Image (cartoon, rainbow, N blue to C red):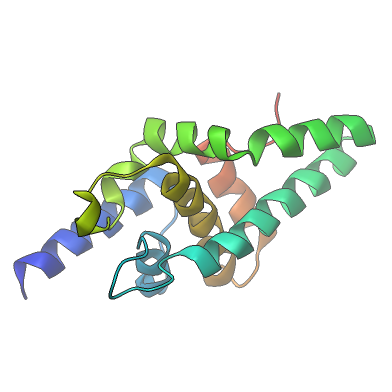
Length: 149
């Protein structure tokens, strides 16, 4: 086993610990943590697209369950799915340290890619859990991307 594989496995294990979810197929998590670069052209962008939609779906479902008004639901979705909020949560949870960064950018994780990574993680959990929204909701709660209390 190469050192880079060991380091990659460490990133995956740490990310699983942070999100309190163990992947059946770690390749999904690996894809969620991969930023675009010359080898990984799209990086985690496809999973981020899915994750963005899933975050909104779960927040709307929770708002409806709580009999919130449309305005309250829209506000919760706007706040919790905003890039600025996702960036803040990604850095504060330590997930930025797990990201497979683009070496050409000095391994720096910028805000846009951090927001996409948060969305991609939610998308990856959605797929890995066989679209179990209760499981995804639990991960979102751990990440602080859940219905405001």
